Image (cartoon, rainbow, N blue to C red; front, side, top):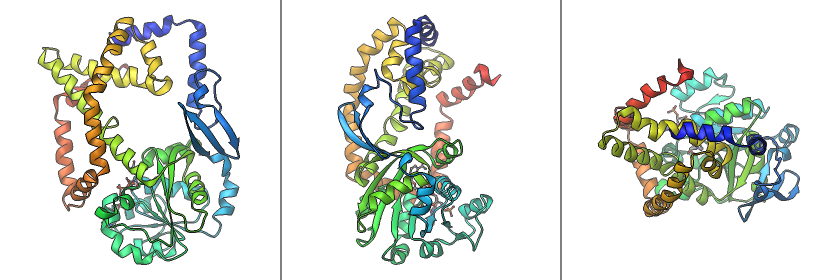
Length: 401
Ligand SMILES: NC(=O)c1ccc[n+]([C@@H]2O[C@H](COP(=O)([O-])OP(=O)(O)OC[C@H]3O[C@@H](n4cnc5c(N)ncnc54)[C@H](OP(=O)(O)O)[C@@H]3O)[C@@H](O)[C@H]2O)c1
């Protein structure tokens, strides 16, 4: 219902509005490639100073510094890192994406993983050669000038005691999550004080890091510095961010990166939105709506019609594209949801900040049978009526016929 009206409304929009929106949309869509900025609605994001590939951007009234890959063309990266070896330990999602991108950029990379484990086999399939650029974790760390710790967060804690003595002076230690050093009381990962310690956290999975690189695009990342012994830690992190395939790089701190990341994935990105879908679906079912109707009004229309509009053009555009009835109701109800949910988000942030979330994650993910336990919980989700209905509804999408 809402979707039909939204679509009609969009079609009814005047040519001028459509042109303005599409121009804006195409600029937003290419923003990760070219820093073109529209004159009207994007005024707030206009760069006010621009030198090299560094921008000071006004994000809704707060000025932040953003670095871009234009400052680090490939030739400059090759020159900057010509004497370096990147020892990338762990070959999960990020190890795969960052490792292959570094290698394709012509840099000297060695992978370090457990011999004959799943990652060892995956690395061989991707063309890494045992004894040449594929080693055990310890062997790789000894070879690296940069040690990129891309083991799972739990494994970073488990392996730290054996790794730390190998982190000799002159090496740079790199993470893609602030988790281990920030919660060092729980993880026991206390980086040596005489090393540069940096972070680059891509805003997406390692698969996306790789696929966007292959498409010639790039992922946006944040970077941070924990220790700056050489005086060049910021520069190193910015260069390495570009080398692994980043387009724009936002500056942050280890603490802010980990707190926002743990909070976000428990909230709107995953846990929160899942809880909201379940609550809405349950009430519809309790009031006699059919499974398909409950699913369509809760998930399908959200993911297929409305959320993409928010992603591409913004929340105001999504409201604007919906019927007057839908718009009025949503405008009345969003503050009620915000007020009801804010205390939950406050509790969640406190639980992240005081280390409770880290403690739970370490305890759970360090158990030898964590994969089986996880599978059990995923099976619970899989067998919920809402997600079983989703499977059928997806089959009925016209493009799947
Ligand atoms: N995934 C994301 O979307 C994402 C995004 C941004 C940042 N990050 C961060 O990037 C880092 C890597 O995450 P990821 O998702 O790529 O990897 P992951 O799947 O969490 O970790 C997998 C790697 O850890 C190794 N490993 C696990 N337990 C081990 C142990 N006890 N000893 C030695 N190796 C062990 C695995 O080797 P085996 O195959 O031998 O088990 C595998 O190579 C984390 O800090 C994560 O927070 C991840």
